Structures are given as C-alpha cells and as structure tokens.
Image 1: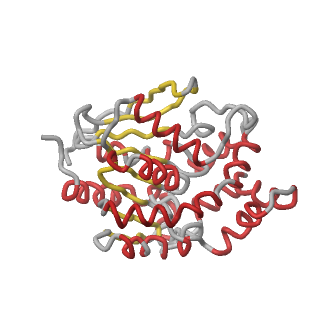
Image 2: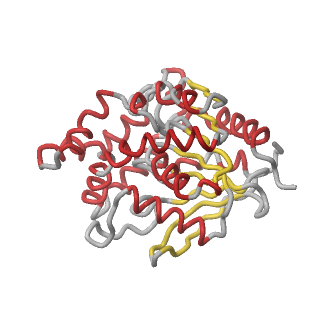
Length: 297
C-alpha cells in the first residue's frame, strides 16, 4: 500500500425511487469490494477501513434503506424484510454497473450479502466476513434470547426488551462488550452517539422491530448459505472480534466445515472490530485479496 490517501466520495443513487446513500473510493477500474454494514450502524462503520484499501480497490459502501443517510420510508410504505433489502442491494449494484465484486459482510450485512450471493453467485469474487454469521453455533445464547422470543411471537411483551437494543445504552453495549481494557480507549464514543441519533428518528421503531422480527427468515436460509459455500468454493476470509457476544467465534470457525480453505483470524476485540483493529483488518484483507482475487490487468 502507498502512503497516498485517496478521497472518499459521499454519493447517492435512486433505486426504486428511494435515495440510497453510499461511500465510494478508489480507482474506477479496480476490483470492487462491496461493504455491507450491520445493525444499528451504516457505512459510517467503514470510515477507517476505506482509505486504507482505496489505492488498490474500488470500495463501495451503501447505507441500507432505513439506515444511515439513505431514505427511510415508513414501515407502512416499504416491506422491511431481509429478502427485500437483499433485492434492493442487488438493484443498487446494477444501478452502479457492478457485475463482479468481493463482499464484506458484518451483522445484518451477512444475510443481505449472502442472499445476494445465492441469487447471483457469478458476481461474487470473494467474501470477507467480519462478525457476519451463517451458522447456528455462531449465535450468542444470551444476546439472542430476547430476539428469538420476538421471532417466535411478536407481542408488546416481546417487543420491549428488543426495543432497548437500539437505545443509546444498548448500542454502546454492542461497541464496548468484549473489547479488552488495553483497546478501550481506541473506541470513539462518537460512533455510538452517531448510530443512536439516527436510530431515534421518527419511524425507526417500526422499521427496526420489523426487521428484527424477520431475522428468523435468515436462520431458515443457513443451510442454503452453507450449500453455496460448498458448491461455489468462494474464497473466504473471516476477521472476527473474538469478544463478540452477539456472533460468537464458533461462527467464524464453522466456515471451515464448508470451506476448508477459509482463512480465519480471531482478533482481540468485539462486535465492531473495525473500531479498534482497522489497520490489522485492512492488512489482512489486502493480503487475502491480492492472493485470491487478481488485481485489474
């Protein structure tokens, strides 16, 4: 990597008449890395990673509909399901003319990206999973208990504990939990305040409760995701915060069951590993893609 820092552009594109915000950096003719964020954040989570890879790759990081600076139509006007978000993401890539790309998947970005891979396997050159789960054993028992209750039956009683997940305290817990003391002062408090402010906007309650209630549809697709791994032999790198209590390290190790050549790195951090280990993750990605996905001719 060179010492030159290429600029990150903040752009929008219309998909189904919805404004989708995205960050982009890197040469237009470079191999593409599509960065798909998780809950409750946005492309903001990639702010430290993008400049570290933009000399060799074209990085594109959209905000999912309802998140970040993308449009957030009400739950009455858009069916917030993972199936719909995956289809919208596919249409986003088509609007930008992306026909081949590697995927970076984290949290919600995992089922969205893997659904995209199932629908268009020919487009996927590689997968980088950063706490992006595809296995039952990757689900932290305690963290998922209230979500599983909501999936089982959506009632005011099951909604309330899940609603707390997107509060400022709930979001801060996701950033801090599992991060060792020596890395705590690398966490930027502005990150969880940024996410909490966007999660507090009008209409977010129904949007986010609806998506979390739909998460069970992703469990049902885990066997299909795993079959995709086995049949495609897609190059896969897992860079995983080992202290994550939402998606635990067993989820990273499980990739080797279906992809024996998967490269697994457990890092001493939590759910949002880029907050403390962006330089390490960028180096691992650069090395992995250079070996497994050819650069532009």
